[in-house]
Length: 175
Ligand SMILES: [Zn+2]
Ligand SMILES: [Zn+2]
Image: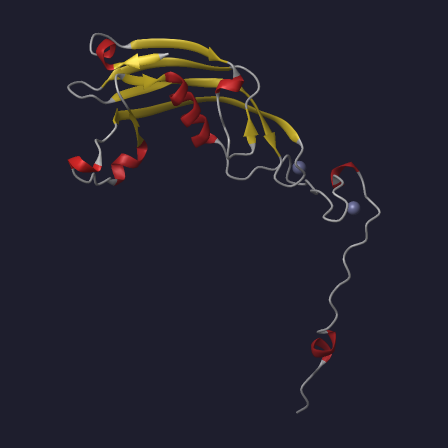
């Protein structure tokens, strides 16, 4: 769904859309979307400008892969958001654009308007944690055999401790 500036100049646009999970690419994160994601809300044009503000709510369920044991488990999303988008700055030929602090909270759109699916994807990426574990107690996978240690002990022994420095450790300088 394209939120066009032309239409927004006339009125605000209310939306309530469901996108199939496959349409939302979360590559580069530990998360995948396989189920429908819903985005509802309203888009407006900031009076007298080309800046589009989008406010709403995103609900759905992702699958997260644990950083330690690599098992996937559900990750629910139900959160409100508010984002602003400005027309993309023109190329360098028009002069360098200096980004101010304020601009870091602002996204950009190109052409006639803003694609709602882009809003959905970008907002979810902002919410996702950098690191994610299935639970604090997750014991991860055995570095030797690759077994999931949460499911029980494997038979691997811990690697032998390097003992070369033991002699130094016990060394006490004589006075
Ligand atoms: Zn885990
Ligand atoms: Zn093992």
